[in-house]
Image 1 (cartoon, rainbow, N blue to C red):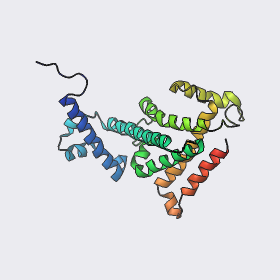
Image 2 (image 1 turned 90 degrees about the vertical axis):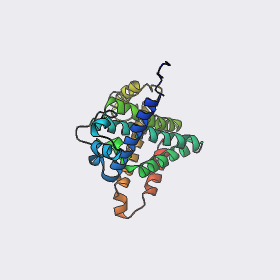
Image 3 (image 1 turned 180 degrees about the horizontal axis):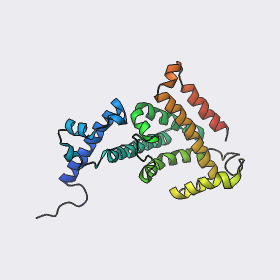
Image 4 (image 1 turned 120 degrees about the vertical axis):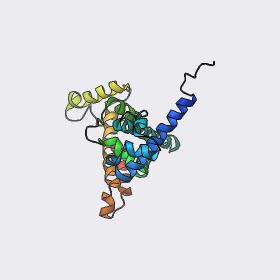
Length: 232
């Protein structure tokens, strides 16, 4: 008798992977329609023609399913940013502008998934678990590379009030944890600042705040990006 495949490509493994994908697709529909509170493994099982206990063979609990969805979302966001960096203008300022556009476009297309990335979807869920922090880093690395391609800023953690002990040291430790020591503390700080500003605009937009004001936020994104580039 031939030995069973050991590389995860046998019929049972393919079936398991297919079911997991179907479960995640159903969960995403629930999130889009009702938010994290609407996520129900029993409802998903019923929709897929399974029993609740059968579904738990694929995901131990709701948190386990949410974690897979968050990791997938980070992966898709990273892919969108990577494509934008590769296909965009060659000049650093143009490349950064392309990343901003890609970040905004992904969030607007996937608001229910974007929300998963930056707030605990359910009470008691650890949104800062090590695996999720690790999954987030590749997207940040794309931004770090784009910001690093700009001229080194004249001010940063080394020269800002507070000095290296108060400002640079935390970024140094952050870089060491993620194995990106080649990135300067100034670039790390500026990248974090840009991400925070961009997230603020995106969060307001996907929640409808700009729409209720009757304004198009596109010029705000352009102004924020231009100010950031000119401040280097």
